Length: 177
Image 1 (cartoon, helix red, strand yellow):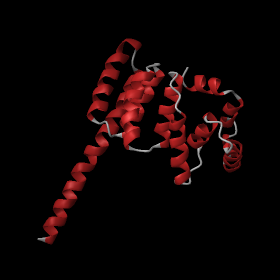
Image 2: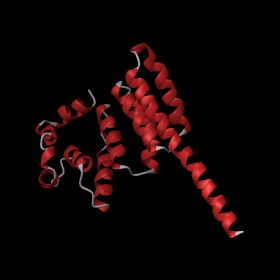
Image 3: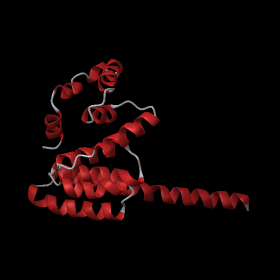
C-alpha cells in the first residue's frame, strides 16, 4: 500500500509539473512570436498574451513577460493593471520596481512603492540594481554607499552605473520613453 501511495504521489507531481511550467513556456513562445511578427500581426499576439495572463494571473513569468511587452508599446496603464495585483500578493522587488517606475511615468509617483522595494531588499539582505534604483528615485542617503559597494563587487557593470549620472526624469524616460 505504501509503494502504491508513493507511486501515486510521484505521478501527481510529474503530471502537475508540466502544467505549472506550461504557461511560462507559452509566454516564452508568445514573446518570440511577437518579436518576429509583422507590425500588423502584433495585436493578435498581444490578444493571445492577454488571454494567457488572465488565465494565469499568479504566474510571475507570464505577467512579467506580458507587462514588459505592453510597456514596450507605451501601454503603461494596462501594464499596471496586471502588475498591481501580482505585487499585492507577492513582494518581488523587480516587478515592484517596474510598477513604481510605470506609476511615475504616468505621473502617479508613490514613494511608498519605492519604500516597499527598499524594505523587502533590506529585510532579505539583498543589494542589487532594483534596490539601487529604488534608493535613487527616493533620494535615499544610502544611495552613494550602496552604489559604491555594487560597483566594487561588479566592476564589469560600471557602464550600467552611468545611468545614475542623469537626473531622475532622464533615467525614467530612458526606461519608459
